[in-house]
Length: 391
Ligand SMILES: Cc1cc2nc3c(=O)[nH]c(=O)nc-3n(C[C@H](O)[C@H](O)[C@H](O)COP(=O)(O)O)c2cc1C
Image (tube, rainbow, N blue to C red; front, side):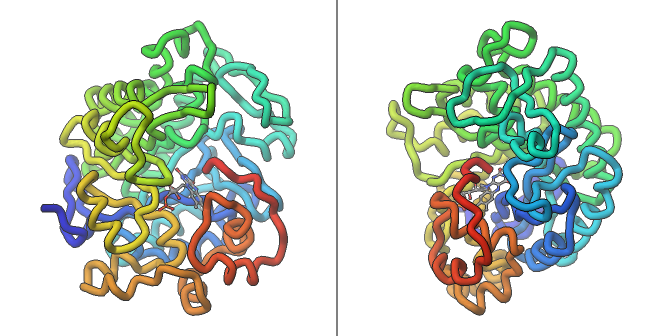
């Protein structure tokens, strides 16, 4: 029987001290896409939040972000050139100080890179489609430009290694470019990058191939590599893919490459698809080829839910709970689960070192509801609207 206090050893030898991960979460703290003091304070407070802390989505290409932003000092982070490295070195350092692992999530934000348009750049997509909710121009990538982004993922991975991260996670979830290529709704191409399920997998496969090439050459032997995926993309009549197809992608990725883990992105770890009684965790878990492990985020918030979630996965991935209490792994490891804070209040907010960007963002996004959010609302200084839905 799996316990939260177990040590987990990944296939390449890295170990984490509890079966916990901090799910990647935008801190809304970048300035000119660079790490700021707010970013560092937030991560320094999280050196004991989980066995591995997955740092928020960081863009690999100049047009890979930033996604929506309301103020120039509240941006998505980047790592597409060396100028970004000092800030990330600091983030990796503060996260590792208590022996937990620091993982960086790498992304190209695709059509979600709205703020790149505001800054005068172009927003890149697999296919030019009239997305009803998008009110800025989109640019369809050429075949060669897609290859350049594949290279960008590799170069950013090299920088992450240089910065001292213990691993990287490829962000293939939540409607960003990797998912857009996998989605039959967003990808209508007929070249190497689209046209059939097999070809819609090519971008994920080529990015993974490039990343593993760089990791084998430059990273320590126990470097951790994960891949994040949303189990399904279904919006009414628009079906990007179902779990039947994501099962095939996960199987392929974990057969072709030595992924340490697959990370599912949902809002409810017990959710089931329309056509099965099994949970998505079980269905996707069946596709993960050992020794790759499975982790998943989505409503795993209380100690009871964490223990229950281990029936479905190897490592529990905790998003919002670590915003409220940044010492969850420490408390689990020391038999103090009952002391985990589950609601925002004055003490929790003081300890949690939330960035001003998060304090202003969280009360405005209905999907991110959390106990005590009204307390946070009192601290918010401006109304950022409700635009961030995919992160
Ligand atoms: C403020 C915030 C920012 C997020 N940013 C990211 C991100 O950068 N990358 C990502 O893959 N998911 C992101 N997510 C999704 C979380 O990783 C997680 O999947 C989601 O919050 C569900 O888990 P939870 O119920 O434990 O919060 C974000 C979620 C929140 C609340």
